[in-house]
Amino acid sequence: MPATGTTTRTALSRKAGLRRGIVAAAALPLLVGALASCGYGSEAAKDEPKDKAANVADAKKLSASEVRLGYFPNLTHATALVGLQEGLIQKELSGTTIKPQAFNAGPSEIEALNGGSLDIGFIGPSPSINGYVKSKGSNLRIISGSASGGVKLVVNPAKIKTLDDLKGKKIATPQKGNTQDVAFLNWISEKGWTVDPESGKGDVSVVRTDNKVTPDAFKQGSIDGAWVPEPTASKLVSDGAAVLLDETDLWPDKKFVITNIIVSQKFLKEHPDVVEAVLRGTVKTNEWINANPDKAKASANAKLAAEGGKPLDAKIIDPAWPSIAITDDPLASTLKTQSEWAVKAKLIEQPDLAGIYDLTLLNKVLKSAGKPEVSDAGLGAK
Figure 1 (cartoon, one colour):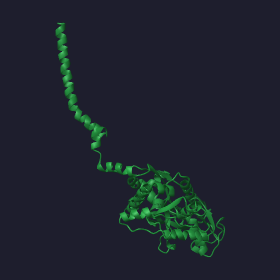
Figure 2 (figure 1 turned 180 degrees about the vertical axis):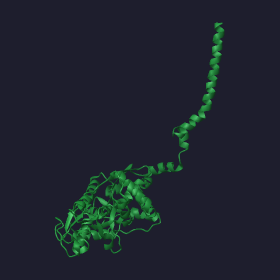
Figure 3 (figure 1 turned 90 degrees about the horizontal axis):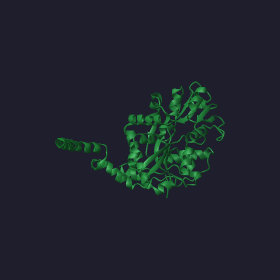
Figure 4 (figure 1 turned 90 degrees about the vertical axis):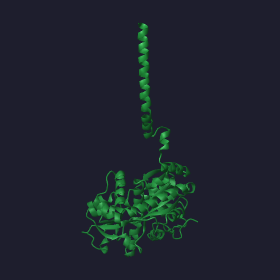
């Protein structure tokens, strides 16, 4: 009997093992499919999209693993805001990673570029000129344009009704020697009025005030108006100011550079392929912005919200957005004019700007895209 019981248990065990084997065999294709869908095993590699494989191949061609990109959280830096938000610049870089860095002022961005902690940056013309001159032409190049316009003179309408009423008033600019400060000082001189460029005192009191502080200064009455970029101008209008002058109207072709793209000369020399990829991304970003203005406005606002914690109110961004023209053209002749204004205001010595531009890669990208090439106004690198 014991032997019979043992034999019976052995037979049952064999049958159970056989059933488990059949179940396991039936489940195996499901398990392989599940693993493949999770991206594991050789089956997953076969299912990789062809474009992803192409991206990996493209990534091997780029000479740097990362590129450090600087910009301001301003609407005049819309190319950077939208290009980062929509991934349009990163797409061109494949496996080279963008390391974005937000700055609040041109001098700090120039310092980062000159100090080697920044490779490429979006910045205004005056800091570009100052940075180039101070380094004696050794540390940066302007490689593309980005934006034109977006600067307005806004005032307290109860105190100032005409341009002549500015005499004796307190008008803010963002910083001594910055792009708007230079433009305002030049406008004052053309009116026949005088202002000391260092102190800001004179027929008009030029009050250098950070854009973040300007709206509160206006509400408190410590300034009567401001010559500022967007969205600060529209923020002041939402607080009761009125637009007295759009700087665009002062320029012959209603165009002037407000934002450039600059690069470290060292990075340009060592990684021209990465710089070219960034420029492909900015050109495609600008094309998308101009073809989709409402979507682009929402995208820029989303990026601003990510930077500052909340988006701009519609009453601010809606009037601000259309006053900015997005362009690949650096409008080099207008930068030359702005440098002449700074000299005239005695803010800088006569600069040697020969070589400040290198538009070789930009024009290569533009030509490849079937777009017209742009000029460096005789200020290109030899």
